[in-house]
Each structure stands twice: as C-alpha cells, then as structure tokens.
Image (cartoon, rainbow, N blue to C red; front, side, top):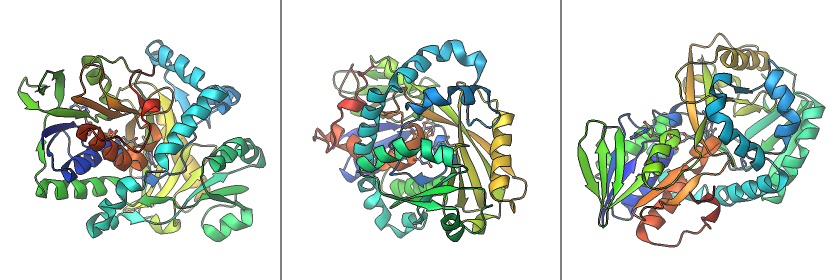
Length: 410
Ligand SMILES: Cc1cc2nc3c(=O)[nH]c(=O)nc-3n(C[C@H](O)[C@H](O)[C@H](O)COP(=O)(O)OP(=O)(O)OC[C@H]3O[C@@H](n4cnc5c(N)ncnc54)[C@H](O)[C@@H]3O)c2cc1C
C-alpha cells in the first residue's frame, strides 16, 4: 500500500482519507486549518440527495431581472469582480440552456443516487451517527406563482428518481406549527436528512482517522510537482514532502493545483452566508428552505442556522451586509419568535460553471487525482466522492461513469 497525500480537510478531503485508509494506504492530510474549518464549517448541513437541479438552469434567464435588481434576490454579483468573473459567467449562462442543464442534472443525479453509499459504513459508528437527524427537508414557496414555476424542475427531479410529497398551507402548519402562515405550498423530500453540527461530524471523523494512523501536516501547500515515481508537495514555507499519489480536495482553492498539473479548470466560487439564532432549535424540527429567498433554516446544535444565498464576487473576506440582512429579516419573518442572531459566517462554495464537480486524474500524471467543485452539495457528495477517489488510486473502475466530471471537459 502506498503513501497518499490528501490536500484539504473538508467533507471531500476527510471522506477521501477515510476511503483511502480503508484500502490500507498511509495517508497524510495537508491543511493549515483544522477539520471542517473551511466551507465545510458553516453550510446548511443537509444531506440533499434531491439536489440534482444545478443553479445553472433555464429559470436563470427568466429570473435575471429579479436577480439583478430586486432587494429580496438571493443571488448577487459584486460588480467590481465582473471582469474576472466574465468568462465563468458566460460559461454558466451557456450551461443554463435546456440541453446542457439536463445533462448536468442527470450527471448530478447519478452521483446523488449513490451518495448514501459513501456514508453508510461511516455511520455505523455511534460517534458519527449521533450527528445525523433523520428529518426530511421541506422547501417552502410563499406564492402559487413560484410553486408553479418550480414544476418543471420538480418534474425533472421525479424523472431522475427523486421522491417527494407536496403540501398546502394547512399541511405545512401540521408539519411545522411555528412557521408563520406565509407559505402557500411546500415540498418534502423523502429520505433526506441533516447533520446537527457539520464541523462536529468532521472533527469526530478526523479524530477517529488520527487514531487509526492518519497524519495531519498543519501547513498550506504551495506547489504540487508530479514526477515519474512520486509527487512532490511543497508547502508555503518551502518544505517538501513526497508521496506516491496526491489527491486535491482544497475546495474553492483547488484551481492553482490543477494549473500546476496541466489543467485549466474554470473553478470560481459562489459565496454563501449564514446567521445563527442561539438557543432556538426547538422551533422547527427539520431544514426548512425558503425557495424564493434561497436559504434554509436548520435546527442545529446551538440554534437555528439560516444559511444560503449566492454571491458571485470572488475570494475576498468582505461580507455583504445586504445579504446578511436579507437572510436575517427573512428568517425572522418566517419564524417570528426568532431573536437577533449572535453570529454570522461567509463561505466559499467551489463551483464550476456547469454545476458539476471535477473528479478524475490530472493531465500531467495519474498520480494526481482531483476531487473538488462540489458547489452546493459537498456535504451530500463528500462520502461518495471519497469512495471514487479510493477506486482511482487503487486502479479500480468506479461504479459511476466519470466522463461528465472530467477536468478536461471544458
Ligand atoms: C451557505 C452554504 C450552505 C451550504 N449548504 C449545503 C448543504 O446543506 N448540503 C450540502 O451538501 N452542501 C452544502 N453547501 C456546500 C458545501 O458546504 C461545500 O460544497 C463543501 O463544504 C465543500 O467541501 P470541500 O471539502 O470541497 O471544501 P472545504 O470544506 O472548503 O475544504 C477545503 C479545505 O482545503 C483547505 N485548503 C485550501 N487551500 C489549501 C492549500 N493551499 N493547502 C492545503 N489545504 C488547503 C482549506 O483550508 C479547507 O479546509 C453549502 C455551502 C454554503 C456556502
């Protein structure tokens, strides 16, 4: 068995480490941060096995005026970032054409149908399964027009094997009595669930892997240099490490490693936010997503986390006060008992313009495997991606056709 370096300690990196160690490899994790401190920290924690409708979908064209000009739009662009964003945005709009979008939806559905297999065995451990809340996710629509507009995507989900039930106002009140009666329609996605503390889950997994021999180098990697017999990993301080193989799971920050290994992959970021309302988790029993406002309210350990929105605006640390305000006001409108939030967070979803991740070997060498770009679905798809990574490293044929996720598809 070989030495494998895994870059990144998020859902994708730690799941990859899990599956690689299960095959008997010696794994070294490289990340200056602790487990689940990147984008894997502040997400909505939903196991969204129904999430096969990418953000690049034909509704984008219809919704464009609202996205650009409405104060309640959950999608914003930082105009100063537009020059850098333009090539990504052009590809994103092309990928939103009906045929391209259906291709992305099918490819996502193929991975999503195996998503639970990626976690099944991990969740046999009581330490990890204690974070799982088996409550299905509820999408909410405040008016009939948006529910009607969602019908084509719901029909596509159904045709791709997603099971769901629709509810009217009275049905929503029976499911979640503390919600204000402002939602005309709801959709409950069968077999979905959520994590009560995504970082807690990853910290626990990380501790179990350390106990089984995982090493964690707390450094940021600067360069990957694939050679004939090994891969050289150079950290920001200039120290070098050698491994037989390397797996790039650095989320939204993976693009530079792809370039170093011969692939120009149009990776950018969809920034997303959360606010936390402390001590309020008993108000709802499940993730409630307000469809028109683009965020979920999730009863996590420590309080309801209201998480979501999309801001196309690069990697800077400045937070968008208008989006944080939109999430806060919308959550308090939906759940009038909510107090003021006590904290907020900004995260960087790793996103390719066609909404599909990159999973596969680099052009420079089969010794470097990519696993990044899981956009809105990294929690859900981390496990199955890790198992595919282990297949690639072992030279096994994975159970999914990897062509749609190829780094060379652009
Ligand atoms: C608001 C919001 C809500 C979301 N809700 C959900 C949800 O409900 N369900 C779902 O499935 N997904 C959700 N997501 C998406 C999900 O959070 C991401 O897809 C996922 O966290 C990506 O995981 P990752 O392991 O690829 O990246 P990350 O978690 O970002 O991990 C990457 C790691 O790489 C490290 N790294 C970066 N650069 C280097 C370097 N040079 N050297 C070494 N290490 C490096 C970072 O420190 C980081 O720890 C949401 C995202 C957001 C923003």
